[in-house]
Image 1 (cartoon, helix red, strand yellow):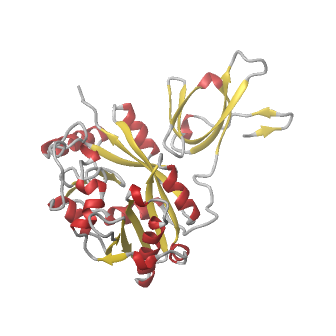
Image 2 (tube, rainbow, N blue to C red):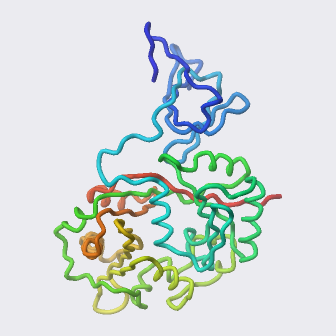
Image 3 (cartoon, helix red, strand yellow):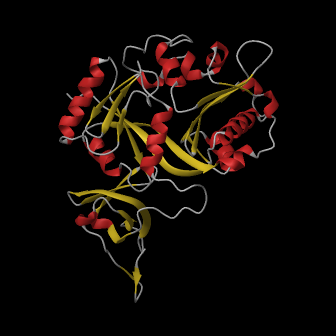
Length: 352
């Protein structure tokens, strides 16, 4: 915080700083002797009715009454990274979108509306990069109608925590009743360290296509889609191995590889998917049968896929992991992956 001569704190922000990254100190317990303070760092997303709304890096909103503000200043848009490849938010967002392509899409200005019969939120949500080309309320009405015509709930994919992410859009959506769901991290790292891991890759089989055995291990492919809980035409059934939506989404991408660790019969012990796109290799659908966990199979799958991606000229890696998956986060920490930004899905509620 800003401490000036004489030990005093100074407020160096005002309403014109909405949209900037700030660091503020506020009084949390006005009745405590000497006062109790807390520090908040994030994007100042609004300053209305004498209340500051600050969105933290992980997307958490913090509301601070102006009367409790003790100090504040504008800080750099994003801290300098000390490890891993350099990457902008927009570059990663577009790479991730190419790795998980929908069955159907439509442009709305710079936004892309995506649908895949309800298979995963990622393929059934708006990719909001840029301007929708019309006022936000009109754009959101169009989004609601577009997804309703397909029997799907309306989602907007948003991101926080890096330069150019959606803190302001998140605040606008939430003020209109769109609720944030499914908080996750986007992590990046060097690809060579993953390929250099001393893992048992001889057990891993690689293929350009996913067969029925691979799909039987993949939880989202063989079960109910989490993207359409509570609504949508796919909620009542199972996608199954032969679903056109599942197969089209999984097989589409610049250069797609599937990994599996076979067992004597039935579903594989572990699976994974990797999409190579220029310098980037994206890892997803890494799953291990509970009966085979703690045998290093996830690491073996990642390493085998990393070596294939290195052969194709990739040098950087990215992946997405849910914010509450501590086990996977610990594994990716050990592999050198660091959080680049966070992403969320905002779901439309009943407009009435």
